[in-house]
Length: 260
Ligand SMILES: NC(=O)c1ccc[n+]([C@@H]2O[C@H](COP(=O)([O-])OP(=O)(O)OC[C@H]3O[C@@H](n4cnc5c(N)ncnc54)[C@H](O)[C@@H]3O)[C@@H](O)[C@H]2O)c1
Image (cartoon, rainbow, N blue to C red; front, side, top):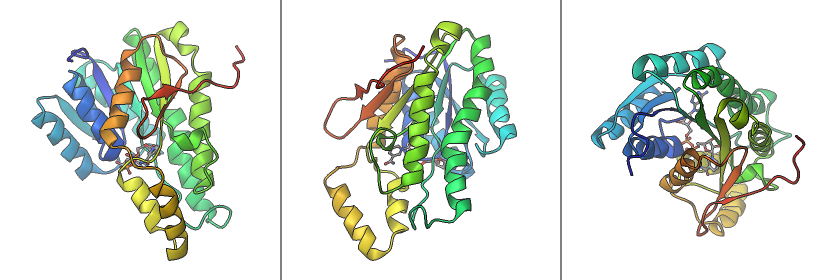
């Protein structure tokens, strides 16, 4: 279905995993895509894959923890493709082992910087361009770790709860500016992220968590991309957290209550 023809999408963390799958899915739906990532070789490979699938794509070197890079990725999108309609706010990292509170401050600080501060900053950078275009759709990559007690990575869980809270609290942007902010909350997805987390653990911890993971089969990145596109397409959704878990259709998880 090429229903996103003429739209322009920006994806942070589009050099691999979920972001790359979303880039391809958006391009197949007709959107032009911009990949913003710190990994230039991966970004170029995503551009190649999109072009190979008949789509239009470009990449811009972006470290999401730098304000000037966030502003540059937005300016680049508008200069290259003329507008900005869709934003997948997706770059994210693990803290890895040792687990908090043993992990050094600079390591958990980086997780907060990439997974939460940059997610907030990127929305602030993107909104003016979307306002100019009359509205848009933002999909944040949160996680199931943002909805449940996730003891494997306490700081990662804290940042993802932050992203879910931010998403729900930005529902008002739909009425105010025609900008719909939603998030996906996937369980484990087959990308380098969970693999790196396991590799960082000592053998006995790794064995224990591998047993936990064996009870939760991994999703394919393309399944998460499908949920992202659902949130982009459904004009009624704003401030929603969509859980994506193995073997079940994606579903919205309501907030305990709303204060409006
Ligand atoms: N894989 C999972 O199990 C899983 C589950 C739930 C949520 N998520 C979330 O989905 C998102 C994508 O993760 P993924 O699994 O595709 O992992 P991934 O490691 O394959 O992709 C993450 C991307 O973010 C980029 N990135 C990291 N730091 C950056 C920075 N400072 N500036 C710009 N780009 C940066 C990386 O280069 C990479 O391309 C993350 O936010 C992650 O927390 C992943």
